[in-house]
Image (cartoon, rainbow, N blue to C red; front, side, top):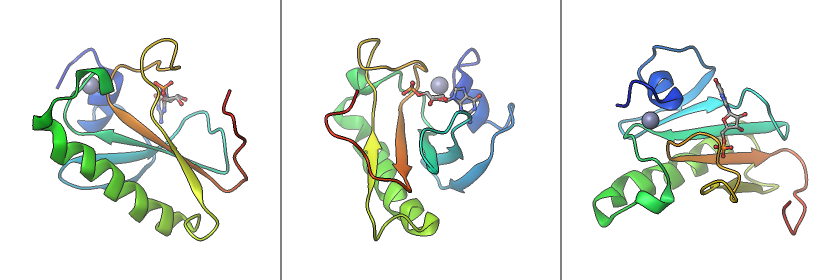
Amino acid sequence: MSSDCLFCRIVAGELPAAQVYSDSAVVAIRDIAPQAPTHVLLLSRKHIPSVRDLTEADGADVSALFAAAARIAAQEGVSPGGYRLVVNVGRDGGQTVDHLHVHLLGGRPMAWPPG
Ligand code: 5GP
Ligand code: ZN
């Protein structure tokens, strides 16, 4: 836990968020500025700044994020139609919060290439 990290504080329950799912490795919340009808952020409970910092020791945390995403997509009703998982990495990747998270976007067709 990093006390100056927004998502660590949400995971710890110190800051409010609309939680949709939680397990031993993941907390999922609704994005405060949704970019699609369904926009859920899956936060690792562990403070890992970004994909750039991952090591093999984080394998279980990464697989837990994807497994949770599949469950939440089903829960949200977007699984049959399809959805998009996005992980922004670093400034050019569009990352604004330096705590590992996966965006789950669904409920509308997604464009390609992404912006
Ligand atoms: P990034 O740009 O790092 O990939 O994603 C960060 C996401 O966090 C953005 O989509 C942004 O809207 C969302 N966000 C930022 N602050 C908060 C907050 O306080 N609560 C919630 N629920 N989402 C937030
Ligand atoms: Zn953090």
